[in-house]
Length: 122
Length: 215
Image (cartoon, rainbow over all chains, first blue to last red; front, top):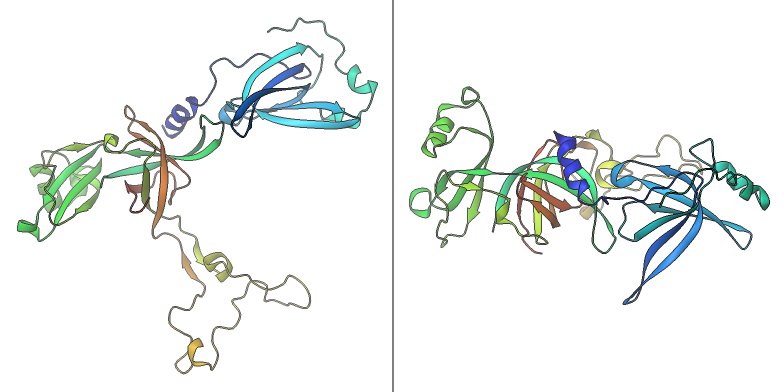
């Protein structure tokens, strides 16, 4: 009864159709960014290395290499500031958390996600 | 002035349109029944008595059952009065039902509840004292209150420490009011008030939601 009521409140903030993407995919995350009065969209591209949480707490982590430095951003899936998530390329993985990528540099990062044998559903 | 009795359901999070993630408390408020209307002529002051949450009549004493019968309702577990100004005309009559509709979205409310009991608490937890250093020669005094009085008159000399001196003791399980919660949303079908921030008491505890005294 208690969780029912809490879920009912929470569900209004949840998105109806979260785009499909998998761990290891390279995704474009379209973020809404406010600069003063202006609102613009910024795209953050990188590998999805983790997805965690349930309901409104669900987040995913995107990792990319910028200027030889690893950058990770954690996005709440249901945040209104995350406008769209587009899977650009699939990546084949055998685990749910790709934290081992943090220790890899250069081509080794790319290798882990090369086996793209399933088509990316958009 | 609007007031409702309710039950804390629990806390969750909700996204605002701006993208901010707000911490909210869900309160199941009302429908409350007007048990009795008190007026200056009959009782010396103006008030509306509200009841919330049904209870078996055998659990209540005869006067309470009688009041409920006059209002054509069943006895309630929680009965509280909403005090009205002396010159106010009573808008309600016994038996009326009050729902979350008395509040509007985005208004500010105060919430009264009974805080969670913390037992016998020390001075750091109870009053936010700083305690003593962890090292540099401190021994067995890390969370102690320090000196409680001196011979100086203002620190309470003579008969002992000053009255009201902050000391260890029972903490929690008392009436607490948290003020100026924004009403983030109202669910009229499920009688829910979604209030920004945390509210005193455990989930399932009773609380009183009323229009903010100073918003």
